[in-house]
Image (cartoon, rainbow, N blue to C red; front, side):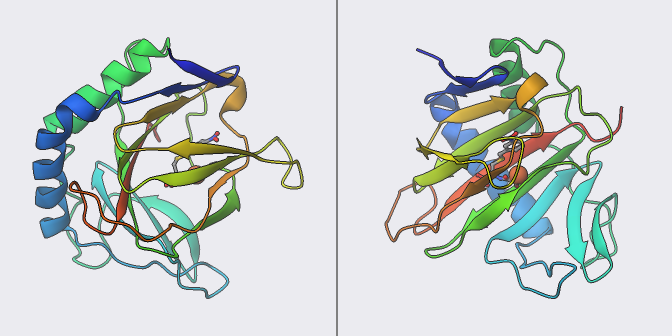
Length: 204
Ligand code: MD5
Ligand code: FE
């Protein structure tokens, strides 16, 4: 029942559900040390999605551009380490999708409140484009937009629910994608939010 979106892109429905207790504890621990914040894009816009990171490298944006940084600019300290529960989930989901030995060095944590959205983009700030990206959806559901290789290509809508994990790699790694504005709701995992964990291997 794994759903193939396209070559290299697989939806593992409910793959994270059995691990939600550890994930909830570890999200709380990481975000206590590195709180969610709304980053500013190079163009000067405040992102509606709140973000933080754990792992050796964190994705940040400001007026100077996008980059991976070993230091949280808010605290001046290194990002919190990747919790074991995160590492094991990312490794196991990647293996299930055919990518053995996935060891991420970055985890971006996205928090969506009602109305928050992510416009169509590519993830191309990573140096190692052979490694997959593993994305874990927790809390409120969202509609993911699955586009093509060009920004203008028509996008498919894919509903992602609590516990769903998507693995993107190979020919799907540079597809355009986005997330529609989150709808209001309540979920025991994250109250009125959706949390997305996005695991990457940035350094080859
Ligand atoms: C989210 N986040 O639901 C999504 C899930 C982001 C982002 O897009 O950049 O933080 S990650 C979906 C993703 C990642 C990398 C590649 C592709 C999709 N893809 O090739 O479609 O908050
Ligand atoms: Fe993305």
